[in-house]
Length: 265
Image 1 (cartoon, one colour):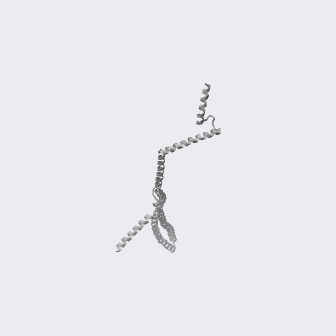
Image 2 (cartoon, rainbow, N blue to C red):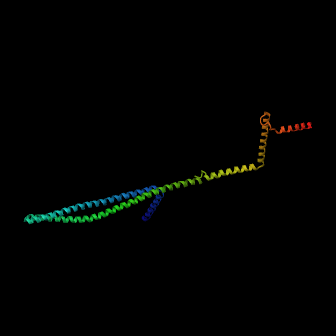
Image 3 (cartoon, one colour):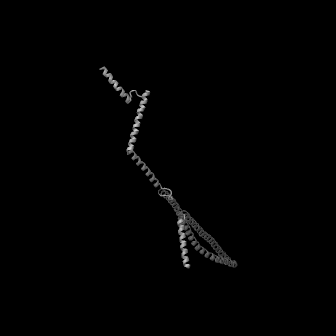
């Protein structure tokens, strides 16, 4: 039973992770990754600073121990010289005292020399660690800069992807119905073109039919009658060209000219 529960828990966890990855905003995830990289770099810098600080402290201790060793060496030499001078003067008491002091300096010098050797080894290790820490920080800084540059590239690609998705949605909306109630552009175009074709067909049929020809002739006849009536009105009013004669005037003038000609003969 417990194993079954564990399996179901793992399944639900994996499913939740899958749903989260599918619905997560890539821009936010990218910023999270960059923030984590920055925080990691900051932690690395702090660790490196501690290592370098330890190396500096070891170096200061070594310098101090070496200065102490040099001082003890000088004091021991001075005590030996003073003991030798006292012995030459025959002052055995002073010679013993200076010799004891020289031995004390020598004992302390032995301890300081050992400390110096230990500090030298420790300082060498600390220096190597500090150099490695500096290298690690430098390399991680380069990687961080690469990630930052990659972030800008990915953000640009993300913006382009969003723009293309919006363009695709806009193009799809021109060719597909929206919710089944709104006609698409293609459907509207087909409807308009169909009506235009039907109207043109009706016009062509009307123009080629007998009724259409008769209407055309009647329109022409009306136009001729209107022109004749207009010329008659101009003649009555004495308006227009004098040489212009109506069909009626030409018919009246012709017999008179013929009669005159016959009389003269």
